[in-house]
Length: 533
Image (cartoon, rainbow, N blue to C red; front, side):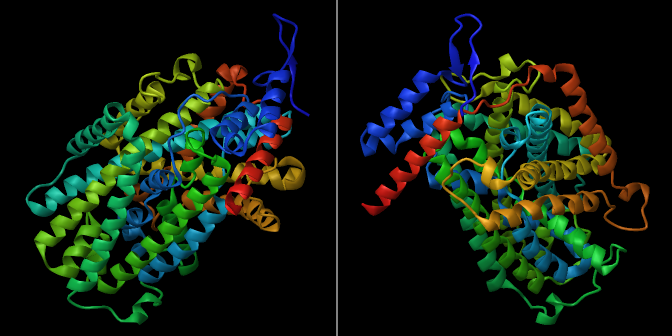
């Protein structure tokens, strides 16, 4: 049955999006309408109303532009280029390649959704606090992960300058200035070209796919020598001090960074056509493109690598390996500039996500001053205030880099863990409460595979939490200490404190199950009929 309540002013019994009679009439109008009327954005808007919301932004994302936005954020192969040096420390080429393959399927299983799912699935007694905590973890994870993207741009740009001018040594404050400059530069297109967001996302996808092809071909064509195939499976090459089994597990947790943000499609659901169908497609294709780009490029990297120790300790390992393989400075500089441009092109989509997820949480009164932040600019048609709030947050957070780059990177690691916790939490609830009785009708039904994913995900997150908190090498020194454990406790304490301060105002989505199931059924019928034509 749909949730209802009595309006205090009128005494009228209403549902989550207004009088029940209106929502039922809306459904009835779709049932008797034409196929064109019942298979377009009208049904999508009805689904949104069934969750207690009204459409606030235009539906402009096609499946291609959705994939463009999602993959430009995840961008697995450039993510692998940024952290493969740590994989080499854990166990050499064997860990770099095979942990990446394992991480692909682990992340593929885990990827789902966040606080809306928790609110819908959790028991009534716990749904508000569990959804509130999950929502805050999701917001913090996305905002801090964007800091990671900014730091990659800043470190790569200054690292390229150091490569071109060996006498130059970038300082922390110079890196921070580049970091802030990148943040400001990244949001400018969102304000100047708001109607071209989908084209920017698609353009970013083309830039990174072409960039992958160029890097791949150049490395194969210009390599001076190749390592034997036996090096790819040789064990004991790590220098972290950990045993081979522990190093392997740490390598998997390190490789999962390459698949951060795979849930991006969920946060633009209200701007997509047929989101019930396109979101799973976008998420799965993002993972597929990530796999077929990052694994081959890493295999090539390991074959053309010469001096593993030098690459592990380089400020910009990807550029160092490229120069070793080709021996050509102009080519190295050109491809490194291309890589930095890809990093930069990933930033506007990340701020798009930061603004959307902050706005959605504010709409449910999850943020301080929610009435202010739950605002869509009528002219620009996107949440300007939460987008700017995320920019300010990243700039302030970047100041931590001036004090301690180790602490800065530890918090980013915490963000990756936070994001995966938010993905696994609703799945754990499903295992406890049952998939068949607590999931609505939907376009994609995984059946028994869904149970496997729901059981595996929370179990893996328990393991991942332990791995993320372990130091990257032993014996542990002040400079190599992992600050993730106290940071996790601190961030979680802030979230819990926020609940006691203003959590009473948090609402969560109000689901009209009758209308939601009816619109899902109509959407399915519309899709099947369209496929037959």
